[in-house]
Image (tube, rainbow, N blue to C red; front, side, top):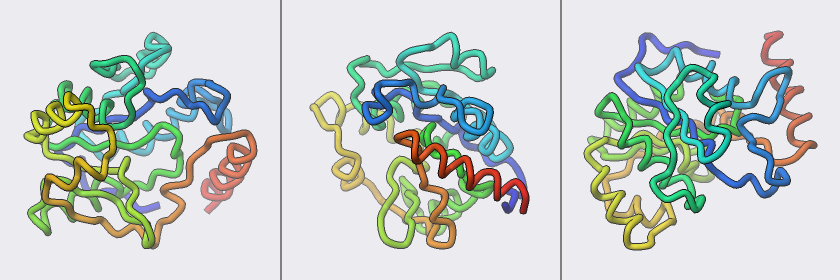
Length: 205
């Protein structure tokens, strides 16, 4: 796994605020994976890449706070999706750039922030989004903090779909076609076992 050259001036927001209906309503970030909570894998991968981290959660706030980073709730606690989590992160950000990653994708590479940042600068974009070679992966995004007002207005108007909000801004795509495992997530026990095997094999490389 490649390592970034230095910490980028980015606040990473780990999105752990969903209902996790496919996991039987369990709080996915706290589900055990290879001996530790799933979110711990994501935090460990992202902490060396960025200047600051926050966790977006809407329940089990004390347990999430135990990981040592600030915990921010959605402004509306009706589980409104990842854009609500991004908005909470933008309000709490300590930097001009804010990146999101979900708590249930523990295969985050060591250069996630670096690749998103390079795409943002290269295309003079307002948002950079990961692309797996076939599809956009919109919850892996890097956003300029100045878009906070735009996002708040979109959410206030009832907007929820990420791609609709993206249409209002300059968008860059960061190529992760060589790293499709980045976007593997855990939604049920079978997927959890498969990801544990992937993590075990990666640690042996």
